[in-house]
Amino acid sequence: MRILVLGGHGFIGRRLAAALAADGHEVQARSRRDGFDLADLELTRRLLTGLRPEAIFHCAAHVGSLHYVSTHAAAVFHDNTQMALNLYRAVAEVCPSARLINPLSNCSYPGEADVQREPEWLHGEVHESVLSSGNAKRMVYYLARCYAKQYHVRTLNFLVPNAFGPGDYTDPTRTHALNGMIIRMLQAQRQGRAEFEIWGTGRPLREWGYVDDLVAILRHSLTLETDLTYPVNIAQNRGYSIRESAELIAKALGYEGRLFFNASYQDGASRKVLDDHRFRQVFPDFRFIDHEEGIRRTVEYYRSVL
Image (tube, rainbow, N blue to C red; front, side, top):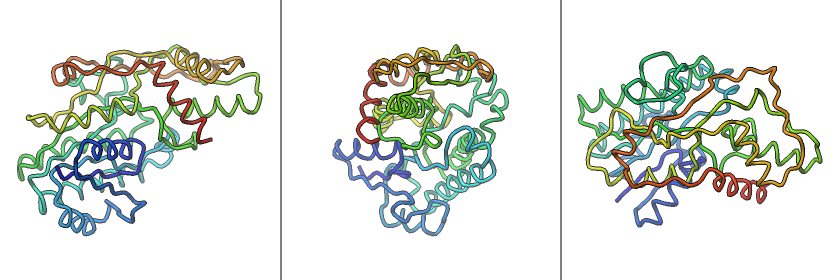
């Protein structure tokens, strides 16, 4: 199958492109590193005309930490919506039979939802801290519906938990949250610090997605016969407390310093996990990697590159 991975040099996109190529597909990965800008409509048209992909994984995104997407809210919303608008328009014009697969962040769920269930996805505002990125992801869903209605463009949308694993940024201010904690604790260990500070009480539960699990599910989505315009969670329905994850990181590193949970900082929501009912209907046999093993592999990766 001819497959285009947009954002193909990013955290998920790079590993996805490599896995698809190993499966025997004809894979092209594009990102700004190649001089390709999805925000340029004419450039996008030319790319699709030349490649004529049968499937497109849209992993391109303007992302960053919570602080980054909040302080750059207008740019994040504008860039992500512009990329999606250009992609759907170009697909409709050039290769309308291509199937689009969109991994959407679960930050697009209502801010007050503790168990994130697909039927309740749009029943409330996203959290203010992800006003830009969360609403940009919701826009992709409406865009997919409209292009399916008018141009019969086919889409698979997935709601993805906080990702972690090898291959992410090495700058803790740009990387995903759990990877950022690993980087900072590794730095604390190397600097001989006796204490490692974590904001909040450490009690909130969060669901995490190991990158190779996410890639495996996205690969398998190519075999699905039905479209999933309304998104499906990539879900384990299992959360780990911030404290538990921090302790697993310390164990994997062999960090012997004190973990200081600074309760003067707010915790945020007490629980954020994704309901897995629909996921199990679509992927009944999928087994996720153990959280501790995922952390161990990620620690080894950052040790090797930092």
